[in-house]
Figure 1 (tube, rainbow, N blue to C red):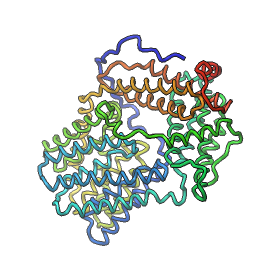
Figure 2: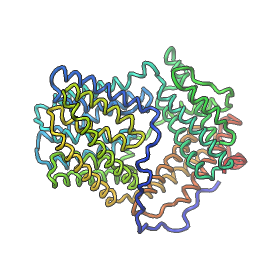
Figure 3: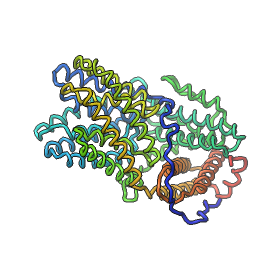
Figure 4: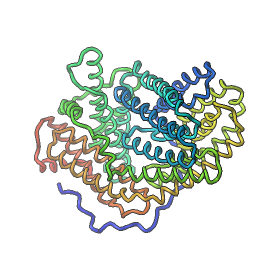
Length: 582
């Protein structure tokens, strides 16, 4: 098995930018399978403090409790043990951002200084959210809250009390986020396993449609999606904690449930390795059986190497994880995006100030919301943001008369819009923005009702300023490291492939290869949408992916057939390739 050959030609700079697409940017997709969880959570987490403040006659403090309440939007994909830790960090991060904003606002009233601080905060929040992979809604909620509080009149004496309200709202959000564990303690792991099974079944169908090969474009896409889903399922199971068989009572039942889920993920992994031998109907049936709280479906057959899979999980749990600081080193691919965010948010804020708009943080937040993995995706988000906000201000004009009837009606309107935003945003960002925009406008009215026309005009101007200058910053601040990231990912795949071939019984090595392949595909997709960079090694990426998946197929075949331990020579892998997908 030879290494992936180097590119025969030196990399060249691309002299022409790629075209920015419009087709399909606004097309709705399928909603997230758990859209109702963050939607219901944010409603409950906001309703409790909002109604409490209404009863106390202090709705002017809603901004501070809402900062903590919005933490309920995070970590719904994580198992509950990991979610408890993640939500605690989210609340701490939100409180830290609010603290910086409040102290700054109390020390200066200079709009120029406030915009600069807001831009730096937005870049830091973007970088940390990407580095920790906290998931949707990412840095946007942090930036929205911290930017708004930057421009709220403040004194140093008020800061401790306002931070206490944020922590109180965060505590409510933590409890709301953890409450479903009482009814369905393994819900996140079951959903992740079901996604892996469905994705593996889809890949098996795609491979069959392609004539039993992986060469078709649809099969390539399905394989990448299945590999990502299988990797995510293993990560979910690894995040649940101990796999010790020595636990008792509820702990023992929990371990056994996770072991049953691991067996199903193994079946999905086998289907990924050998799509021709997979049974898509059985995979989908097992996925359907994971709904609810019933027993985890049990496959009829037992793999000879199944014990090795579960021992491999225990070994991975004992191993060290990647520390956060390693993702933030000077060569990190996150840093160019952070620079874009800082520059774009500063330009947007100062552009709004130059036009005399009284709320420059709206333009700043608009710019912050745009930045994705590359210029093309950032452009797409810009189009979606503008369209969603323009439709959203029309929705605000229709909702404002009802919301202005009283404070109770204002609270009901905000809660309904928060639910609608989470129900729609996973279908397409612009649909969610239709609800987010009027909600953001209504939040400014908890202290006092304002003229809708003035709010609408400011919002439209700030949206256009933020979108135009934000996209301009993405184009001007180049990301030359995107191609370098592909080279690093290629090297990681090669190392992981060699390790998997050297020790075929090491299931952790196989999962590391799967993770490396997922990272390679992500790096290639991100670089494909960048401007002004070297020519991409597309053929090397394709070759590395195919070689990596063939190694996975050979490894799974040998482990399934022999189930033994130990190391096999490299040349035995070539023998196992016979009949493996090409």
